[in-house]
Every structure is written in C-alpha cells, then in structure tokens.
Amino acid sequence: MGLLKSLLIGAAVFGAVKYATKKGANGKSLVDELTEQAPEWLDKAKEFGNDLKQQYRETTDPYKE
Image (cartoon, rainbow, N blue to C red; front, side, top):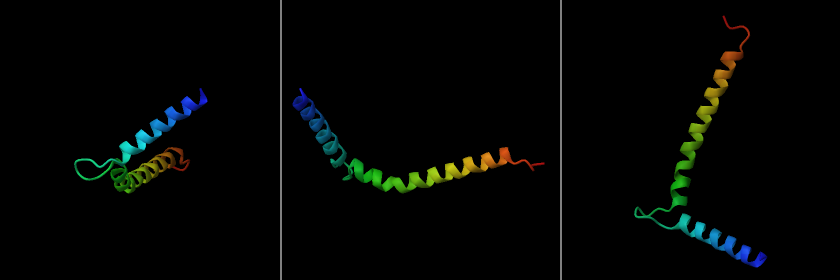
C-alpha cells in the first residue's frame, strides 16, 4: 500500500512540474510568468503593509488632537 501511495504522489508531482514548466502560446511557462511578476507583487505587499502600519499609528496615537 505504501508503494502505491508513493507512486501516486510521485506521478502527481511529476505532472505538476511538467505543467508548470510547459511553454505556452506566448513562449513562456507558468514559472517564467511568476518570476517576472514576483517583484511587482512584493512592492504591492510592502505598500499594503506600510499603509496598515500608518493606519494603526493614526488610531493608537494618544496625542492626537
């Protein structure tokens, strides 16, 4: 039973890797697109975090008039 389970998991991982690295119509794979968009997403996440920090500081400032 353990061997069958290992074979199924291995086949699923192989299929996922093959799908993620398969070149599409535009000549780029899913992995290529993700690596190109990652810096943009990181910048957006940093901006969102800074906005949350600013909102927290505004609501917890005891000296606010």
